[in-house]
Length: 243
Ligand SMILES: C[S@@+](CC[C@H](N)C(=O)[O-])C[C@H]1O[C@@H](n2cnc3c(N)ncnc32)[C@H](O)[C@@H]1O
Image (cartoon, rainbow, N blue to C red; front, side, top):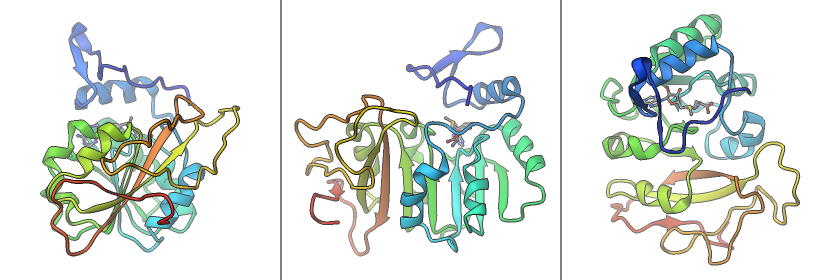
């Protein structure tokens, strides 16, 4: 777990000093070459996310792992009974590394793909998708149609004021349930049960006065498609007592 987080401004230094954006394949290719194929899970490992994953995606689901990187998450999920995980990433370097590593695990497929163009997959190819830390604001606008074909989705990181508006674009009809997890290794006292959802306001914000115990907490959004609605843009969020 030695990899540093991406720069806050979403930019890093590329070859020749050119500034590379966090959303560019070249940036990630260079990182994965430097890291030499060492596995790295950003922010949380599967054991911490398992209760949420298990809840929205049964092991028989056809799962899409978006921006898989070199994470052990998919391998851990297979060990936990998942049977079909298609892993995509914009970095050809990491996809090549992961293909070699997992050539003998048939439940895992690795494809070099940009999430902004999912046209290769016919509608209804997947039941659920997991996006662990790929920075949605770069991608979602071009991704809405694909999202509409999923039953459920789990994404991580990002404050609700940023994530919820993206998730509630027209065409997306999600019931959104938010969980807040302390960083791995956080030693402070947590006053609530981390498996309890954190209620969101009508506008999809944290309740007034709510302050996570760990200021660097991680957000987990579990989204389930609601049937029969058109997704008019106002958030449908889980509120206290509804769970
Ligand atoms: C912060 S890392 C997270 C890796 C892994 N999901 C984890 O949790 O450890 C973000 C990953 O998203 C990939 N990525 C960035 N933009 C992408 C895009 N447009 N399409 C697919 N993958 C992308 C990067 O190559 C990188 O592997």
